[in-house]
Length: 402
Ligand code: UDP
Image (cartoon, rainbow, N blue to C red; front, side, top):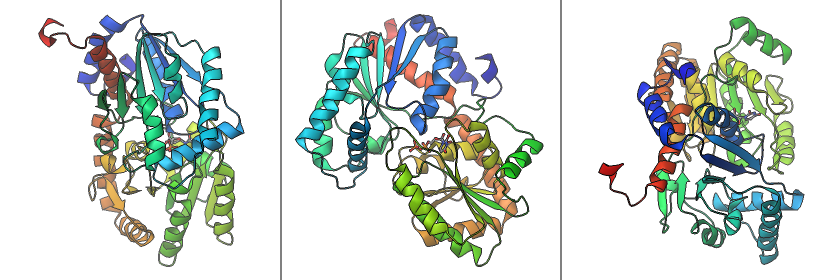
């Protein structure tokens, strides 16, 4: 905790220490479906060591699956985001079957079990005790109904559910909590870097440092709208000389990435100032440097869970232009820490507005950093997870006696 003192709000650190007096040495198991790629893995990588350091016996397990399983779970993911997908009875059975196999190999014994997203949700059928919580990171506010209803039968068997944004929550007969995700300010992804290192990274990727850089860091996923980003950039490029970087890496639980990457490459062909970077997993320092080298960071998502990349950029003092989707409006205060957009034209307009107003860009960046400090640092999320666990353990007790 000492490393966060002077960075994170003091109240969060104090509350964590108090909660640890009760939860020390208790076991806290997290299960998701990938160790790399995407925001969930990003947070777990940072959170597990913190939990261990404060004395919680934390463990992180991954469910294993084959291509068929991840094709099915990607369809489920898309359907929950509202896209039309057909999930047949066979597919649901396979989803369950793979979870059953995982339940045989993963030690499910723990005092608290946090199941992340729909891929491992059927594991609840194999519960051995402890408090089981479903942690939903995706926007289920307007899902394909039959898919949501099917999953709901599993979800309702949990003791509690956690959503990132209040509008994602569904009325279910269990305790529900709203806990937005967070970034770790002292990780390689977010720590301060020297100007030399930032320049060195640009050099290595053969990106000139002589013009403003517009950046989007994302998995190659249609919901992140990389094509829309290129369209907006091409529009801006008619008036402002600038560079576009689209940086992404594959996620093992996202089989569509390669197809989308190829579409993006094709669409960018013939534009030498568009740099498409396929980064290996765990390129945290490079992403940090690219974000710091940028003038504007975009996250032009059409659908989004939370959009960690927004807080990452705001922490680095960058104005962010984000699609008004999922958790992005929670982070971007329109006109104050960045701009929310609804279209390609709107994105191009806001890019130009920021490029032409460096003073405004600086002001937005500074406000954004403080906003992240107060709301979206990992210590706040550790505080919230421990609080939920504590509250479930003490459910029904008179608060004054605790
Ligand atoms: N990320 C990364 N490498 C990439 C693309 C993304 O490390 O090539 C990270 C990014 O910095 C962020 C996370 O993956 O920390 C993406 O989280 P977000 O919530 O923005 O989107 P998700 O992928 O979970 O939908």
